Amino acid sequence: MKLQPTMLSERVEAIDLMRGFSLFGILLINMLAFHSPLSYIDPYKWFSSNMDQTIFTGLDIFVQASFYPLFAMLFGYGLMMQFSRAQQHSQPFVPLAVKRLVILLAFGIIHAFFIWYGDILITYALMGLLLIGMLSLPANWLLGLALLIYALPHLMFTAIMFISVMADPNIYIGYQEAEQSIAAYGSGNFAEIFSRRLTDWYYGNNPFSFIIYAVTILPLMMVGAAAAKWRMIEQVAAKKKTWLLLTFSSLVLGLLLKSTPYLFDTNYAFQYVQEIFGGPLVAVGYAGIIALLSMNLNFMKALSPVVKAGRMSMTIYLTQSIIATSIFYSFGLGLYGQVDLLTGTLIALGIFVVQLIFAELWFSKFKRGPIEMIWRRWTYGRNFEKSNNSKR
Image (cartoon, rainbow, N blue to C red; front, side):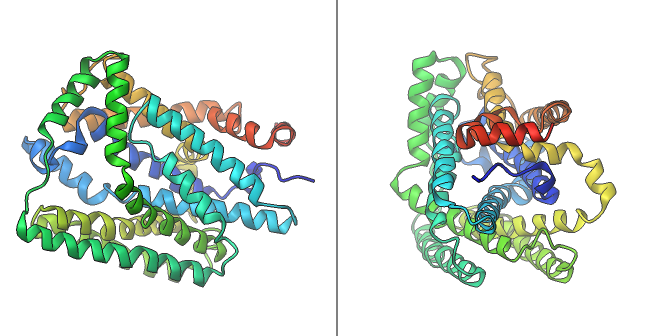
């Protein structure tokens, strides 16, 4: 007997709900980069109107850097669930996991170089391959090592940044790069868009950036894997006091840290503190809120479309990029650099609402998203077909 995809009856709806909300938060922030040269601007000054500044402040404190950590932790949680399932069935886990992650890497490469430069799938796949070797560690070890890998380098980088701010507090602004991005994405041909996409991808994925990702994404995944060993989400009712303490303390401290650019100064050192230390804490708080509310059946029923979106996270994530680039790039409506933050945020909301409707309609006939079906068929082969047929 070989391992098969997770059956619908085996899924934990609270996890899918967290994924669904993460995808919405990620879209809200990604939308800034979909329609503006976010990598090369000072966002505190770029969005100049009072309305845009208000929206940016809300996104900056409550959304920015708080949903990709949640998604990373859920990625680690899911990988540990698969590992535990393989152990229960006395089946080899590593070959299948490596195959799944290599396929994920392939999707990420296509996404990054042919759709949108802000891809995260490549990073998730590479960090997931590193995580595989740690899944047999005890939960306490996973959590302890995660905190160590995360805290030490980021505290060092934070100290360096505050020292650097004393010499030069100005945020780097790439005026030429911003103009080139607007020209390429807004009115360029395929070759110009492709060239700019490669440049922007490397700007955010250079060797130093990869080190930052490695000491950020990997430990977040490790935290999720440790939580899965403790079955934190499956046993939320039994661990209610722990969740209440985690939720309250993480939100209070996290939101305080995320507000530091507004309480003190909007220099890049406080932005780093905001994102690296405040973001994951708020993510834990959001996870706690969802976990606690998931015990209410009416709540889960009302948010069923979000749960379904979470079940087809790959489809939702990739189609967000396809839709957004079709709106803002020259091969579509060519609105890159021409919309304000309010309009961009409303477009993000509209895209997600359309995706929720699609998820609801799709799941009335199928039990997995279209891209998930392709991915799992490539991974499991005939086992996918058998498990898929057994659910119909």
